[in-house]
Length: 246
Ligand code: ADP
Image (tube, rainbow, N blue to C red):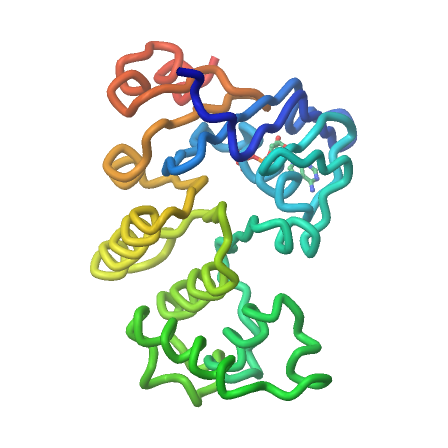
């Protein structure tokens, strides 16, 4: 039978900065229920592609389709509402809000939730459940700025999950965190994947990528050069060549 259509289908993205083509003719498909990895040497366009898809950067041309809908000009709020959320390499949390409030805001998909409508017991309960799952419950009432770097990344991850997204894009989830926290991240990714969430992960830690992601897409000079299983990617001479530089 026919394979599932991609959940995320990016076609022919192009974006340049001055004379530099950060992404060009870049097409990426993410199948539903995968943990897809996006790797490539420094400057290969991962961040640019990631920011365009999530609506944080405009493309010069190209098309983003998510869950069957065309998004001619993705913007973060609309993608979020469509069920696509992300984390940031440097976790973006509201430092002056409490840990609990951060999740309430994320669940409502709107910071104004804290000011306009009253936060209900249901909101609090949902946020507390998520904090318990992420072992952050004891920190619920602290300002997010009081959390450790790794805990802030966990909170950013929890915030990306609380709106029940279909696709979560993780920007270097293990960068700068200790080995125990890397294991924790991995456990949460696998757990949510088992519960139906699709992931697209940019990550430099090759051990992590090869262990967790399948398939893996390799970018070089702004476009994919290889996509396949970890074994296929590791065996492909073009990948090594890309990392060594032309
Ligand atoms: P990666 O995330 O794979 O390291 P990037 O998407 O950050 O790659 O960068 C791709 C190319 O685009 C690089 O040559 C980089 O220098 C350039 N680039 C990215 N963002 C900008 C920017 N805001 N201004 C100028 N050049 C940029």
